[in-house]
Image (tube, rainbow, N blue to C red):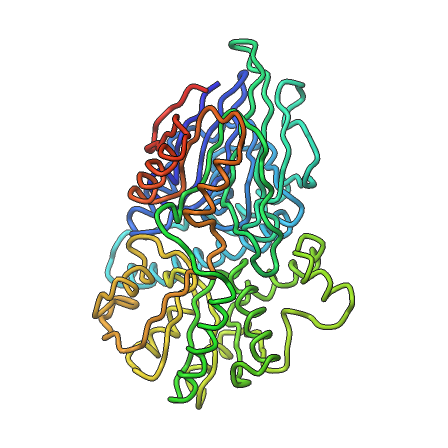
Length: 467
């Protein structure tokens, strides 16, 4: 039994881990890498293994850095089942189609320029047609239900709540290893959530496991509490509105957008912020929010109570408008007076938020609120590192917009959460840290060892571990 690492190793995006056991190859996640454009092209196109040799895939959750390369896997020959939770299956139908649509449009735009200059034309990583071939392979499984990924009794899998986003799952495997005859347990957290966050249930605590593969995105940082965050958000909104500025919030369409909308609704109801117009400018967010409504049974107790009592829809209020058309999105550039615009993508690399930044970044009255992790070399990372000027659509722009960072809205466990989670696992023989930048992984490794977990590994792309 061995584990091979092909993505999100000493970096945060592109999660792909290949488990080889008893003659089967089981891929844990199949995510897209995000960063420098050439790195994106190389790392997303080349898996490091032959997709035709993979027998099955397990997807921890629907974020693109964990699921977004599935259509490319199918395009290159994978034909097996793709296992996930029911909510993840429903979300992937929108997430993957949106990803393909964006790629096709970007390539179409770039190829128009290349044709004029006589350059070689390019192709998208995958197309809508590839997504159409991928979706029928999805097979959904309920939480806390044991199941077998193959027609054998030697590998059994159970999904548990990861507390990260709607449908996110910790994958727990019980394996009868034919090489040595031993029964072994292995768990992969995917992205691990936090305690007491709005909307999503708290992560399930695994009581005991032999090997734990854990994310480490915030392995060397701590978050402020969500209650402090709402107070800080209210202060920023009030101050920006008073000077007549716009509030831009880049947020992933899945998870972060719904949390921000929930908080804004609450703050307005309580009278803590003025009743400004709030625009969610993302067609994908509209569809994703509908999936949240359909799967309210997966949300936390407070949110479920709101749905079941039919008192209020957490994702709808008088001041809120969901924007779908391009023309409506463009019209926001001419909006007079303060407003709040929540738009994707969360790292300011693609999507409509880039256009809003282009039109707002040189106005000191405006504010950009960063509410999530920004990967290396993304526009969001450059902005929080105070690079000035920054290039948007290939042209330099002076950064006059105020920038505020609010990691309390992060759906990732922080250093304290990760330490606490691992320490509560009994009889842990090996801990593997993935999905974190190099320094975060190494700092968390040191902390884990200091807290009594002796065998901690931080793999690099291409490493192979015998388990």
